[in-house]
Amino acid sequence: QARLLGALIALAGVADNPPPELVLTEIVDTGVRAGARVWVNCREHNSDSVRSAAVAELQEALQEAV
Image (cartoon, rainbow, N blue to C red; front, side, top):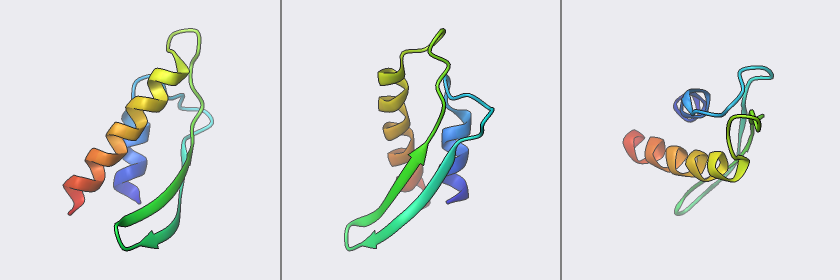
């Protein structure tokens, strides 16, 4: 969970305050399910782009953990 949260914190466009939140909700046969909440600086970043980047970064962090 710390690795995934670190990936969110490091992502461009994710605001520091309030900090990102990540909750692992379920362990399933194919992996884990998680919910994330982040604030995006919409003046400088597109929220859809940040969301897409967050999904990609979380997937990469999970693959590195295996």
